[in-house]
Length: 283
Image 1 (tube, rainbow, N blue to C red):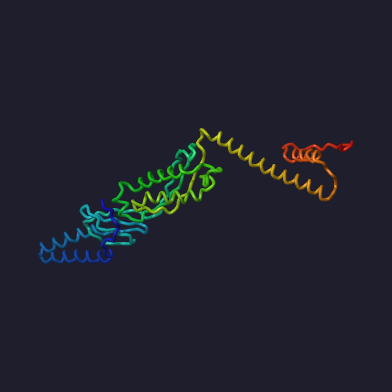
Image 2: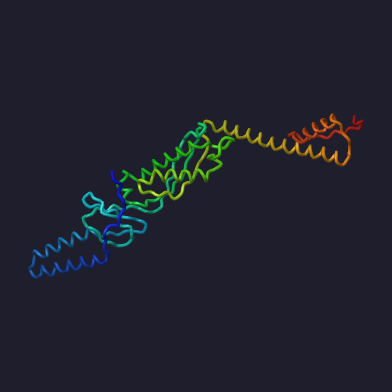
């Protein structure tokens, strides 16, 4: 099947054609008064048929013209027009539309069930293809957009880890751009242009939400502990170097180990350290 390409339809200024039709009716009336019935009837028939060709088109709308089952062109310019009176006129909105998808349950890259929804901003740019190449272009947008959301969501993990370069949570802007390209490729056949896409909802599915929350909390605790230990080691190293360089006290290896142990406990412990005063010998 050959794809239909949009083309401009023949049209005449509606006000000019209205004046011509009025002249035709006036001429027909004059002929009736002069008993020229056949000519007047012909003019009246032509005048009444011409009335069916008037078309009012609002801004950001188009009219697809179909003559006896054949596409003859599209009118996109707003205003008052006259076209072929025998043509069927199918109006289509060229305004920007929003498709707000329902929450879709899908498995991410690692098989975890998640719920995701997105907003697709689109508009018709080719009226002929929107009418003739798909059955219902609005329903087509809905189905293909949801399919694109599922496909993109399954290619990435919900959150990032060491093996993932991108994630749904951490790279929402990049994911939205990927979704836009994927959706555009599916809707181009219908003469649809995707203006913008963005994720409107993203969460783990309820059945694993609590388990994943505990995992995230555990990861956060491990990350925090790692930072604390790294800082404590640096502080202990700095303390030992300062004592040695300033010759405040000479410590053998055993005393250094004891001091490191005490400092690490004081710095890493979640409970505030309680000082103990040694009134006796250092040894």
